[in-house]
Image 1 (spheres, rainbow, N blue to C red):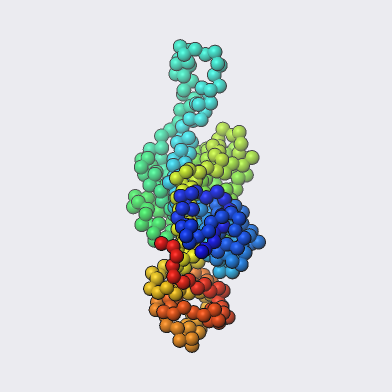
Image 2 (image 1 turned 90 degrees about the horizontal axis):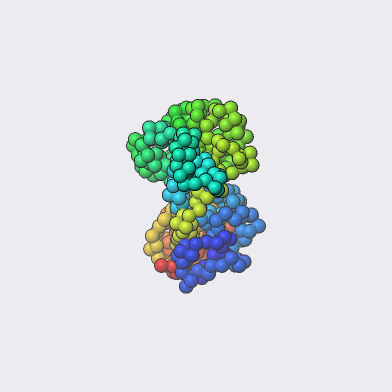
Amino acid sequence: MYKVRTYNAISAKGLDRLSRDCFEVSSEISTPDAILLRSFKLSTSDIGPSVTAIARAGAGVNNIPIDACTDRGVVVFNTPGANANAVKELVAAGMLLASRDIVGGMRFINELAPTISAEDMGPLMEAKKKQFAGSELQGKTLGVLGLGAIGSLIARLGLDLGMDVVGYDPAISIEAAWRLPSSVRKMDNMQSLFAQSDYVSLHIPVLESTRGIINADTLSYFKKDACLLNFAREQIVDTPAVVNALESNALRTYVTDFPHPLLRNREDTILMPHIGASTAEAEENCAIMAADQIKAFLDHGNIKNAVNFPAIELERTTDSRLTVTNRNAPGTLSHILNVLGDANLNVADLLNKSRGDIAYNLIDLNTAPSAQLLDQICAVEGVINVRYLGKPCAV
């Protein structure tokens, strides 16, 4: 029986993926094998020695101490793409709101004198509607910075709206490149993207290299009267620099899902209360993906969508499996295999993958190892942790 502790309200459809015959799931578990959360700010003290995995039902993992987890061999999962459609639809709304003064027009109507008659309202609308006129998205250029799961959907959205689409992502994966429509023009750098775009949509993670990437310098490359949309992360934008760009008319509009006091009550900003992934469907998709990843890891040791471990999957060939996490140093795996050989244990199958300083091994054995043997493997220099997985429980 595996134990999973939750730190937020997780969709029931996700929790239902963890069979009660094999998993105990609760927010009160003191010694969990895994943690399942959404936005709860996890500290190192929350991650007890029993924890082997943490799954974030969402894409961002800035609420999890990644480096500390990696040092301890704790796998951290996220759910890239599970909320992509929800964010895509909100970006579409943001572009439409920025292109036409829809909000201003609605406000104008609601602020009319309550005594106005139906006969007077029609002519008044005809007389005043010009002040809310905007422009169409069709024919404009959309620049997408970051072409991952969400960015590639935004690029396709722009094409569907009749826009010219340019994109830039220095770290684009092969999988993401295949998802990207061929008609999206790839830029050599983000400055070129900014200079050509009427609308710029940000879809990059928060890294040391991306923190404050939209600043006074990068804003100077923007096309005059451009609109900036940030539905990615608050920290990638220098808010005071954006305010200066708006006040100098270097930037026409800023649309963001991350409101800031400096941006309130401005005619040139459209603020939303961080609702990009707040749909019932997105929460369900994230919870299902996170639960499935925990289940596959706890029962089989397989890893998919980890932010600090390599992706690895090996079909079970026996009922005895070892997972070994070690520092990625030459000779460590051979030392582990020597320990198994000295104990006359036959390796039926093996898969080894590495990511940065971490190496991870799935080893299927024909015979169950003893507790003493597991201690010997743990004692091998460079080994961080060892798990023994017996006959699978989850289906």
